[in-house]
Image (cartoon, rainbow, N blue to C red; front, side, top):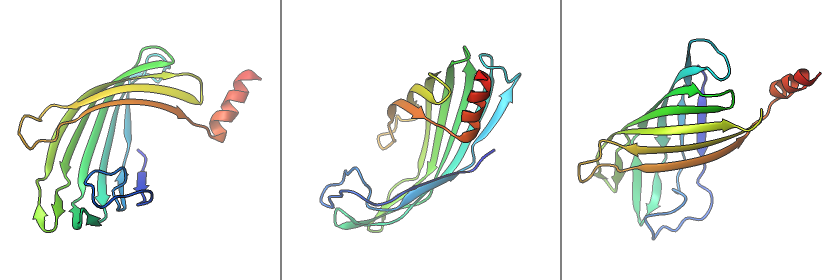
Length: 175
């Protein structure tokens, strides 16, 4: 179990006359506790894990949202993944996500709390010890109500990571 923290700062371009912007003109972030359970042996190419990521998103106030004030209640998010290595470098995962809460209020007119469930698949490839590539798709499944959140998400990520321990282990393999 670890601790996760993200913080987004209200920087960049923001146009208060448009409801959709790249920035939200407010602080927001999340606090989470990633948990990984291993099922069976920790053997590269044969690992199976269950991963949970409970998080709480916290939002500041946007006091200039199309000339109004936008506030959001905290949003609870739970991600869960069943991950299986197919080879030492290639893995796949079945993903679920659940959102609850996060009611938005614009000038004292309250919206609805979210209660959404999504399913997806992810595949990843470890190019080398420092570089990984993942592809994923996720979609909501309880979105038949007219005001329901509808989400179809495609994800591609290329991640480069390093630290002294990983670099040192790599050097030991070659000596």
